Length: 283
Image: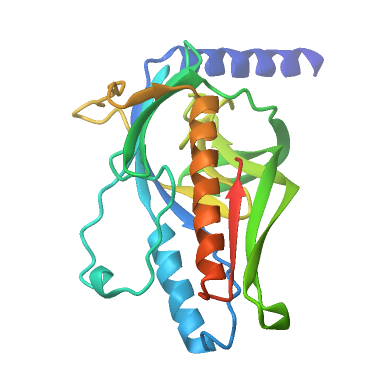
């Protein structure tokens, strides 16, 4: 019995090794969903208007991306949407920092680096830095996503929540900034059937392609995988934009967010609003 077990393990190891040695190419399509939870002053907006606003926000956060990948490289970019004829009439406008539709995220796994072309505050940046080394915990739990058997992996990170809150105490309109830190659990589902250490966005480092990942607020789920497409894959590293490191980019964004907070604070002093804005940083 012991010999049979050893032989089985050896065959499994050899099969896995042969898969990793293959020159894999593929295109994976992902869709994103974000949890939207906004509390507004009921005196300014009734329940029906709040529900309409939540539906609009949810729709704006639903995006589609493609990941073109090989064993060692990948390009992740958003699929352009057709213009919504109702968008111009919408009274809700949302801009997510660093989410320009023409953004391109290039990853080089062999060299442990990435290049991310992204637009923020009407400026084009090229963020070049090392890939994050996440400390994944491999779990025993598994499930099927489409035709692929996926296994669970988890990790944790710290996220900062900044809130700008309007107060109307004593009839005076003012605002204050609140900040707190929370520990977030990130859950990923990867499939060894596609043996590349890659995944959507900045995620990767697991023994198989990540088909689903989420942190409780944002979920990224793979809807389609095409292996060895007939036209091949088009992986090119972006070169346009102001070159900055990840730390430099975060510093620039933090400065811009503070400027927005000050502007918001000044607007409130002039008599506008009575609501709360929450900004999450991290991930």
